Image (cartoon, rainbow, N blue to C red; front, side, top):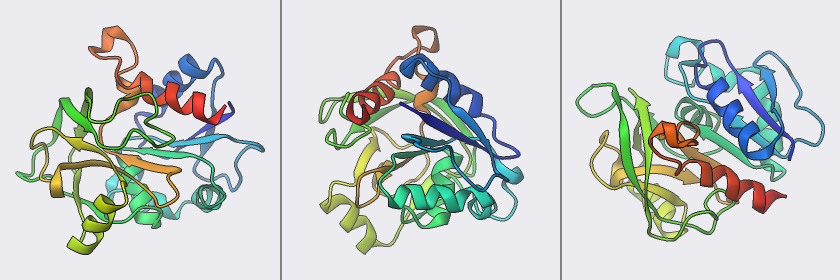
Amino acid sequence: MKTAVIVFPGSNCDRDLAVALEQVTGRAPAMIWHREAELPDGVDFIGIPGGFSYGDYLRSGAMAARSPIIRAVVDAANRGVPVLGVCNGFQVLTETGLLPGALMRNAGINFVSRPVKLAVENSQTLFTSGYEQGETIRIPVAHHDGNFQADEATLDRLEENGRVVFRYAEEVNGSARRIAGIVNDAGNVLGMMPHPERAIEAAHGSTDGRRLFEGLLETVA
């Protein structure tokens, strides 16, 4: 499985994501600087990491979504290449239009950094085949702008079409309907605020994130 991780000025989880991918796939990902215009030939998976791309000036992810490399990411996603955006990466995906909605300032205007429980709402995606439908997993969050919001019609469509993949088991940041992660219509683009790459080894306190990458590897391979 040939993977790539996009790196922006201000990314701080790119190495975490790279380590997780190498542990699961046995192959280090290509680290792609935001100013590049092309992705490696034959890439099977693209990761957009967490952090504070461009210092989170303007809106979180807004400037990163206009980087040269993002045009190639959007083209790849439209061809069906799996794309995972974590935390700031989720924000970038909404800013590109690959996913609907927006990530707003957390309710209470506090940075939230702790492990949280997530309900697996859809285990039939490229990213969730390693989980059981309805199971509760434990993944850490670390964000200030993770409050997912969309209009009611969009939220209803996400629910009806099985595009809500992860839901917070308890109130975390004010997200509409406690949504923590969603996929696009085609199911090959996932945005999520929790950090699965930080739940890979037992020393992390949970290995529940590892199953996301293992399931993806099995499905794609």
